[in-house]
Image (tube, rainbow, N blue to C red; front, side, top):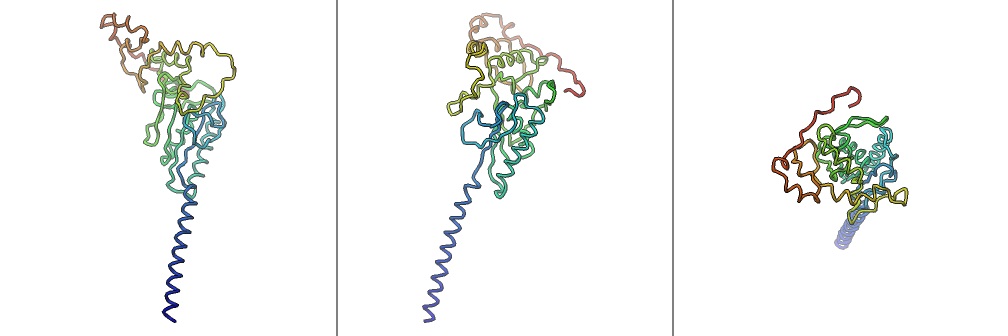
Length: 277
């Protein structure tokens, strides 16, 4: 009888262990979704809901004030919102994989947070603080908006920038006048919206007026004649022939080599103005 009781006890122990194992597996399965990788999105100016990022769907929007001109105050609010979202995602899930995608002004907000949160991977689209961007090459001119200078290179931050996008590819007019003119043309042709052209990307936010603007009418024409010279983080001597529109290539080919190979020299840099740049 004693032997039978021992077998019963052992069987009960095994059954209990199995049930415990199943319970643990079920608990792990229930906890797994809560600790799954997460991607946050921070939209650009005039996108306070962060629902119009030019990237594939599947991210969690991080709302922030996002006015047309994102002041220092609104950017601080954006950093606070993103930081709170990251903290909430990490709470109870140490080591969780977190990715942040930011566009335009939202890229500045996201990048500023990722500079101090090295555990977070940041994908920045059209970051104004990209080396070579508008905040890198020009002083602060708008009241309440501070150009923070070039963003330091960090392993957890990646940059995406379209050539001639005046926000992230904005050569200084004094050090690279030809590049600055191209950036100006890119601003006129709205290169800053080129990121919405991917097949998996959402449509750009609706225009305020259904009537096409002169810029929209001329964009296809100007884009066809503006060569895509590679974006630069600093002045690089480039032969003048590289700036010629494709439609003029037959004419450029007829020019003497000394003309085609001439490179525009850099002009003096902007002087330092205390309290401005």
